[in-house]
Amino acid sequence: MDQIKIGKFIASRRKEQGLTQAALAEKLGISDRAVSKWETGKSLPDSGIMLELCGLLKINVNELLSGERIMVESYDKQAEKNLLEMKRQVEEKNKQLLRIEYVISFPVVIAGLFMCFAASFVEPVWVRIALIAFALLMILAVGFVAVGIEQEAGYYECRHCRHRYIPTYRQTTLAMHIGRTRYMKCPECGKWSWQEKVLNNDDAEVQK
Image (cartoon, rainbow, N blue to C red; front, side):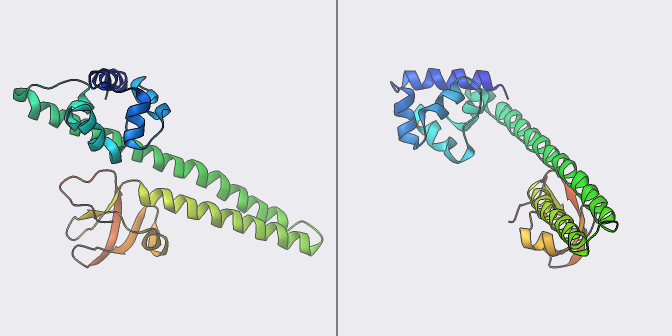
């Protein structure tokens, strides 16, 4: 999506409705700085306020995401294009999150294991114990963070019914796993299986 184009469109529609940035921000319950960022193309409106924003600007969400008024005859085609673009952006964001999971996990785990190994040569004993305890706590802490990232990025797919869903953090943490494949119970069919991580939710209803 062209954020610059969307920003200019928001600005023009705001002016046509006789609203200042401050007035629009007040109606939406946000800061005028947020509106300024939209209009300069630095960010997009949050999905939670898109409908309200569109109502104030007298446009629909499809037009907002397109950054222009849409003729009736091309509405469906543009809507499909916007949906595909949103899907692409979500998938890319999930990929980035999963890359971050690896980036923060591996160095900390390797450093923790090295500290445990090095501690075996340290004297006195209490220092050795302290180093090992610190290393294990460090690995445990980054493990919880990594699981949280994995749980939020993408979906898990049941091998029985192919239902895709986002499990709770507790379900993800307690599930046996091999890499990003976890043994969990599907909320749709109720069967247990080794469920693989997928980035999109095609033809499935998300349950969270």
